[in-house]
Each structure stands twice: as C-alpha cells, then as structure tokens.
Length: 297
Image 1 (tube, one colour):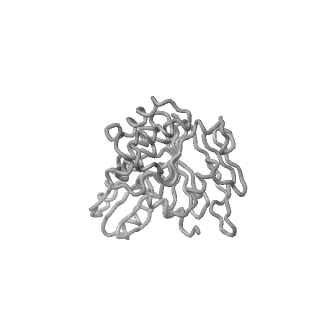
Image 2 (cartoon, helix red, strand yellow; image 1 turned 90 degrees about the vertical axis):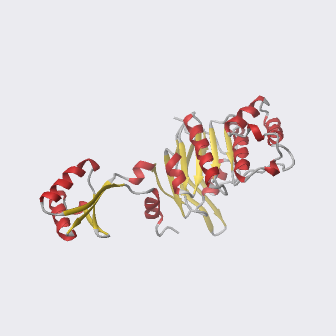
Image 3 (tube, one colour; image 1 turned 180 degrees about the vertical axis):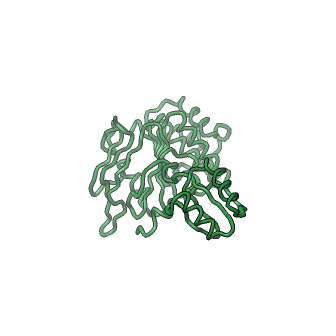
C-alpha cells in the first residue's frame, strides 16, 4: 500500500538546534490524523518538510510514494501552513480565482470550495474585511481548490473564538468523512480528541506515541468512594489483585471493566462498606499527553 504520508527517521537540524528528531510516522488513506504537540515541538517544521518547503537533514519522507516537492504529487495535496495569506483588497472569490489560474484549476471549482467552507454569502467581500474565522476558512478553501487527496492543516483554529473553532472542527470532520485524508497539527487536546481517528504525539522534536485516541486513553476504569477507605481497598485487593487497586484522593481507582460496577458495588455493600460514589472513569487525552511528554525536552 502507498500511504499518503510516510516518514522514517525524519530529522531537521538548524546548527546546534534539532527541530525534528528521527520522526517515523504513517498517515493512512481516508483518516483524520492528529499531529499533536506543544508549541515549538517541531510540528510545523515536519509539515514543511512533507511539502518540500524545507529539506531534511537526514531520514526520508514520502507523500503518495513520492519525494516531497515532486510535481507529480503536488496536484494531489492541499495545505494551509501557519495561516492564510491573501490580497486584502481583493474579494474572497477573486483571491481564489487568482489561485485557480496559477494552479490550472477550473473556475467552476471556486464555488464548490466556497460552499464547502460556508463562505458563499461573503465571497464578494474584500478579504481585509473578513473575521479571523472567515480568513481561516478561506485558507482551507484555497487548499481544497485542487480537490486534493491529502489536506495538510497547520493549527487551523489558531486565533479563533469558540464558535469559529467549532465551525472549523465540523469542517475538518466533514472532509474526513467524505474520504479526504487530513493531517492536522494542533496543540489543542480537546480539538484532536473530538475529530481525529489517529494521533501522533510529538515533544522535543521526537514522536513519543502514535495510536488511536481510544488506545492512547486506554481502558476505562472504575472510581469508587467507600468508607472506611483502607478497609475497602484491602477488600478490593483481595478480589481483584493488588496491582488493580489504587488509593487516590480519598477513594479507589480500580482497573476493572465498567461492566463489573454492579458486582463491585454489591461486594462492598454486603461487606458493610458505605459506598457514596461509583462511576466510570476515563482518562482524558490531556492526562495521557502529560504522561507522554513529561521530562521530554
């Protein structure tokens, strides 16, 4: 299989500074891939190397099996890196018309992409009058002009208000559902958790994890508050094993399937414990992210 994106040991150094350090990742066809990491982690530099805008110091990158920057694959790739740049005194439609002529795209595609990003009713307004959210959406429209098989977006919700962020998430999810492969870089954990199929976590220029969001978060557990806590913990360790019971903040965290909640409750109540709380506990992506990136410099 030829993957939309595949890297092996991809590295970029600027003098003594290593911006990207041996990144090996794979983006599969038709998925929304979240490239997650804090600001300065090497996300944008990696995306620039994938587009042929920056040469790697070492390692390899392939986009649809081709070397980044090769004309053969550029017709299949759309990108928005570090924010859109348009002529402020031209309308949104005229800016897209200019781009379509440079790229050899039919003008009929302009109305299609304007509709995709919900800008049809403001297409005649000057770009300089657009809100930040509208500017970002026009940038995505420009990236979609060639009807790309791969869409690369670098922090597309930067600077947006909550409504604009929600609109952008909906748009990206819709594109992914329609079959476009999307590689989305972000430092916003909630954003990635909501819309991405798989995630690559990068910190200090290194890829520290690559998996689905569900696999990264792991199996759900049970949170139990029962009195007295020490005796309840001893009872649970006898039933489940010592490695599956943790005393935490006045309660118990049990590594057990949520389906066993009724059985756990029954065992505790029959043993005379006062159970005041029993709920399913799922790790957030934020918790996982902090664990993965802890002490990574």
